[in-house]
Image (tube, rainbow, N blue to C red; front, side):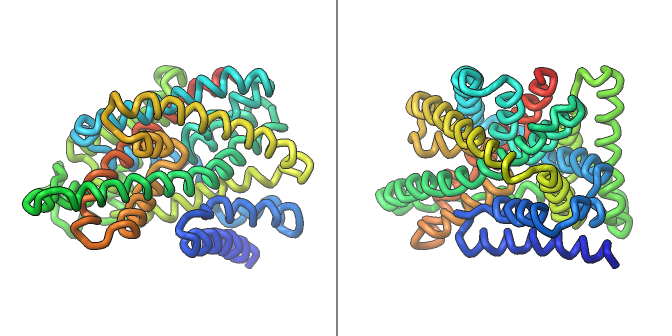
Amino acid sequence: MQFIIAFLIVMVFMMIGEWVSSITHAYIPSVFVTAVLFVLGFWTILPKNIVASASFGTNFSSICVGLLLVHLGTLMSLKELLQQWRAVCIALLGVVGTLVLTLTVGTWIFNWHTVVAAVPPLTGGLVSALLMSNGLKAQGIQSLVALPVSMFVFHSLVGYPLTSWLLKKEGRRLVTEFNQLPAIEQEVVPDNQDDNAHMDKDLFKKLPTKYKTAAFTLVKVALVALLSSWISSLTHGNLNSNVICLILGVIAHQVGFLETNVLNKAGVYNWLIYGLLAYIFAQLSITTPQQMGGIVIQIVALIALGLLGMFIASSLLAKPFKMTWQMAYACSLTSLFGYPADYILTSEISHEVANNKEEENYLLANMMPKMLVGGFATVSVASIIIASVFLKLL
């Protein structure tokens, strides 16, 4: 019975986080609320092994990372990336701005290990936080193990409302622009992100539908993840398996081995995300109020430096790349959360700002592709590479 109780508590924390995020229109991120609940629980009555008891242990998280990275590869359209090259450049150069300021000014204020442990989650998302936490544990730097997870939690508290505000400013500008267009030009094509599923190649199109089960889909994803791990082992780990998972996921999708949004179609995406989040939050069990107090100072300072570096880079590059500074900065900020938060925020803001469906479609057509490719370029690609490099710098 204790295992089902542990699972129930973990999922209740996740549920409360989602409800608060929904009520506040994502101004208070779900991950922040859930993390606070875990921290308070660990400091009071929760057993330290509650996440492992709920079945979300180390082995499960290792499986999650590989499968989810392959899944992210299936969400990336090479054609879309090429069409939105400006957004990709802006997002990546925004990350460079963050790296420059944190690795210069940040290392003057804090020690090298602190900055190296905190920067990858600041320029990426969940996987970066997990990689850095595991790397710190492997190096025996226990005092900083909670730092990447805490950075992941806290930067979303700033990133979500700031991005929402920027998208609202850009959305209102686009509404004005739309209403000044001639009537014939107002017939815009709606956002077609979901239409990619209808254009998939399929190497298994001759296989009867009754055999295309969820298990069949997971076998294919697991094979790609296994191949990635094997290739990494051939290089003795010099090529990070996580980066290979992402690359092979893109290739498998392009050739028709995997369909778009593959884990959602198998019905396991949310389960894996919850499991990985739970494992990440379990790292907070080693913290104490005193330790967290010290970490908060480091986190706030590094987030401020990171966002400032990102703002400077985005503002300088916005005009040359034919964007407003608000759109450029929003593209860079996708590095703080990535998919699906970038999709959800853009959809919500477009619906909220627009006065009718035509305006909403115009906003989606102009903002959604930039936000999605920005998030893919930073969180799905750059952050994994940055984390892999920074692990060797610890």
